[in-house]
Length: 335
Image (tube, rainbow, N blue to C red):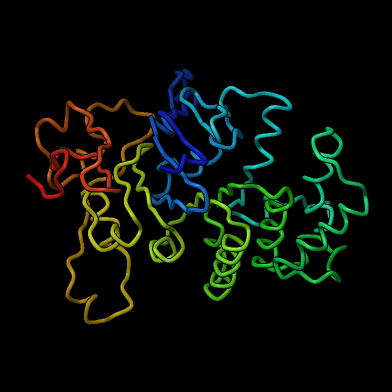
């Protein structure tokens, strides 16, 4: 059994805010007890509605946010407890590609300086041994690898298209040769033709570098195409986890079923024949207190126990886990 590269254990990320005229303190429960594993060379997809906590989870994993509680174990070392050089050493092996390729790049720096910056930081801190010539050679190699011409080295981010800016972001993430990349909807803001180019680039990099990925996306077809396993997130918790093709073929959790029923199928006959699941009501506020199953007020199969008991994510088939009272442990059919 191969040990996971990354193991997230009961991760909680809460934010304190003030609401109303009297500035009453409230708690936003963005991530509310997530457990995940990513194995070497594998890609885990993370899907769910906007605001369910996907991006917050990624930022908590890489320690852009300090987790409220829980563990983020990377090769056995807990990022949630690390500080200073220890955290910096671990972050050398975990990098992030952000959703917006415009706001994530410094507009005052050339793309050569942007890609070089991680190398400069680690060299200054004494965590990486490279001279100036080696750094410049590495930056040019990265530009070649992501399809950026050397002629563009002294240009600024605003001079590039969205797809080219995202290539700069990918090159920057690759600079330190990380073992794990967190890709937060890296193609959502791009045209469809450019999306295909970036996705093919990510697949090529993954194959050549043998890297692992946490791939966050709204596009279920993209997730099925690029990921090995998919986790479905709802209101800060994981409700289902399964192999990508199996989940697309037969989702088990009622929320997963509704999510996949909304994804378009490029076949008019199949599209007309399938049943669309329309959920009633709105997603509850992450500020409100929650008791029982977080999905119970929108679930078409809810039972009385769903309002008072919180289902735990449990394995119902080899490689498939669901957090739902419809399934007994070891079975995959509703009771």
